[in-house]
Image (spheres, rainbow, N blue to C red):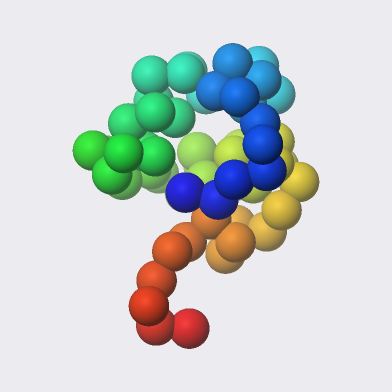
Length: 57
């Protein structure tokens, strides 16, 4: 997952997404919904596409 040196607590507070959900997304245990990705991108001040890790660019 994209990192900007933001703690789970900070990101959860900024986005309204629970810490456990953010952790599960970061650990690839669940796939986030589009609305969750949008909230995370806003909280991290980045584009949604910046949150995707892929060997295909």
